[in-house]
Length: 194
Image 1 (cartoon, rainbow, N blue to C red):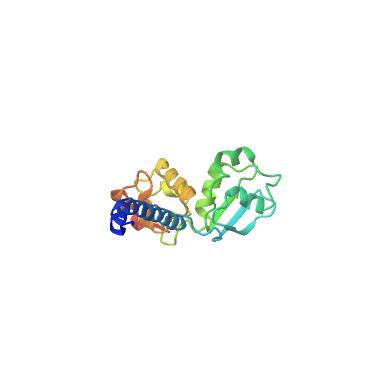
Image 2 (cartoon, rainbow, N blue to C red):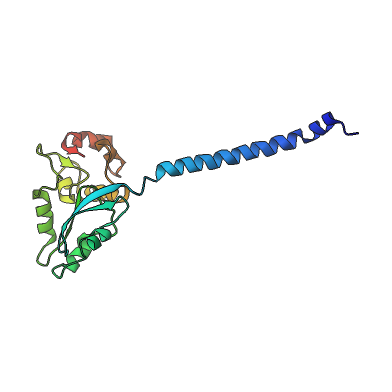
């Protein structure tokens, strides 16, 4: 006859180990699934982008948040015959993520990088406010460069950050950009906006 107490003593430790491991594995997969769902925003988030210059059908178009400049060019009917492909290759990253309420300008033959930069600072794209503040989500490198302590290198990093991670949610998030610490942020915080 089998003694139940002896059998229970014999298998208690192995059963405890198996149950503990099962619980740990289950918890691991639950946490991975939960973190993965927070890290990936919904794919259907709509953004609006103005595309102008040397495209066949310039205008304002709706896209999803993960679409890139190349998608905007295609949506606007592709490049027109007036496109300056050499200048475009120098100043436009066709693989960059589109920015909500942003503008994509395709250079026309006869444009220069300087003329494009100058028009970007004087047009009404919303990169500078009425009080002179600079919108860090829409500003060009030239506009960012005018901020105290921000040179061309850090301005480029800000633009790269926007292209990689999307728009800043709060102006304080600019400290996530390499080269911008709390002391530099203190100098520019009253001159920037989102």
